[in-house]
Image (tube, rainbow over all chains, first blue to last red; front, side, top):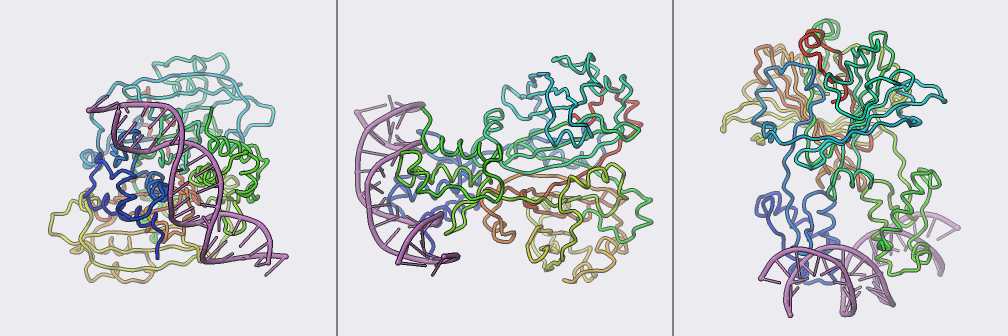
Length: 263
Length: 263
DNA sequence: GAGTGGTCTAGACCACATT
DNA sequence: ATGTGGTCTAGACCACTCA
């Protein structure tokens, strides 16, 4: 026999999945469920509801009740700013909600000098003693934070340059790096999926049960030296991350077994 | 004043972060904490611990106690099978644990014919009535599931072909598609980050507080028609997703403001 | 058998938003 | 004022693993 709190969660989850509890609708109150399942200590009911909260399916809105979560993904497209839009993207714009709904963007920028974390130090191939500059941005749409974006570069490279000004650089910070002799020509993207830290919950105003993607971009100059590491933290409930790929014909000749797309 | 259960969670979280509770170590028992925080109803202590469980930081191992989670990421590299390894990847192989530790791979394959979900239907541009074939794979390393991989193709395309055999196809299913006149030349990758369904928890043997990445690959033939949709579900605690990018020089000329890598 | 966490009972007082 | 969920108390019995 399944525990009561499991049954409560399973029943409600199914009702959410099959549409009988659509997004935005109100769930039964704890008292309702207590009665309905003949149990009751409130804690049993609450345990069941907390499962759904941690799955990101429902949200408690005190003191109104629990509600089925409504989600509206934005498109997070790491390639967006340096690629023309290929035709296959246009095919999907209608799938990816809210892409066109121009809202008011804003961002905070802070610049400081810090000791690099291990993650940053390894990717920038720094020695123990070297310091880095960090450009932290919190990006907002209509006041709502949707993205944390921290860029790290060796202090010796960017010191005194516009890269370190805590304001928007109209021609782009990457252009600044190019003027410093480090044009960015290659990137390695790593995406980690995890639950947020309490700090991230606060800065991104995340609801419970919302995982984040940590997108680490290491960019390289033409001589293969790493120039900059950017760490983007994007909330899982508000984004879809999109990449596009075109087959390299050379590789196809060499590796006919290529299981392209399937792995 | 912060609630007691919050203080318990915050204190333990900090000890995990600063290394005084290293990965694999045992946490104080509920009884210990009950005493230490002067509270005690067990439920208060358990509420605090459950926060950490849902953040993926600790795992209860009945009846031994709670333990700090140990993680060992694998590399999930959607491009791995059709690109030569560029030099910047080699730079990082030492960062990405367990890449070289060849373990015994295995997979289950099931093939069936189904009505497509909305997601699949839209991406394959199918009409209401069309059916699809699905090739479901559960991939394992040393018996442990690490990846669900479901590929969908229009039934009219793959019916009767080797694509539909529920065994490994040595030359690759994409080669089969090429022989059917649909060589795959382009892909669109979408990555969604979310908490797993109970079904996924079961199939991937996920611990609590483990988010998943759902990686949807739509592949296209040379005529831009969609051929196949593959849905990969990868556990967040066991993987890092890696992409690589090389700048398109044409675009650089046209768009000097390109903020490459930083967004 | 002892100790652990898993489940459940039957209450209590509180903060908060809406009525 | 009412009703909601948030926090907490003080117990109970159980299943499981390990010594």
